[in-house]
Image (cartoon, rainbow, N blue to C red; front, side):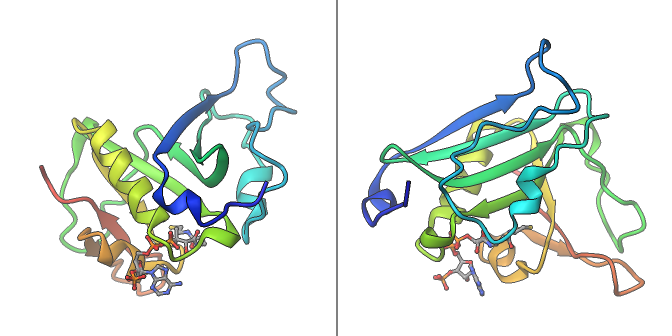
Length: 160
Ligand SMILES: CC(C)(COP(=O)(O)OP(=O)(O)OC[C@H]1O[C@@H](n2cnc3c(N)ncnc32)[C@H](O)[C@@H]1OP(=O)(O)O)[C@@H](O)C(=O)NCCC(=O)NCCS
């Protein structure tokens, strides 16, 4: 299904997808909409089977899938990053977020992140940017860099 213009104005629903206990851990894939196209299909095709509880989120608007998210609970903040705060157990990582190709740049990515911040108001969200630095900066998240200048920038949501 292709996201249409109406997806922009529709409510977003966050549908959590966890691997059922009875599923084959080598074969399970999150049941996303296979007709929605993404630049980084490999993010969604491969589920590291050793993960105890793989956690994905399907974002639906107007009955259509408009974005996908992978969470890592709680995820790891690399202490080597310059001036990085110690987030403690309240941290929660957005491992990957991707908006469907046909829905880019219509505010959906921002709405998804804000919805996650609301839904997990007791957590401190963070993400390592995959060439999306302007996106994370536009959300008001604070940037931290690794001294080697090579690792992906780390962005942390503001304290509430
Ligand atoms: C990054 C991504 C999630 C942003 O989602 P989106 O719905 O397209 O972004 P939004 O419309 O909410 O954009 C909000 C702001 O982010 C910035 N932004 C978003 N995409 C951008 C791009 N391609 N280049 C530069 N700035 C960008 C802009 O400041 C934008 O505000 P503006 O449109 O008023 O200028 C989406 O482009 C995507 O899925 N990209 C491929 C996967 C990826 O890079 N994911 C990030 C993993 S860490």
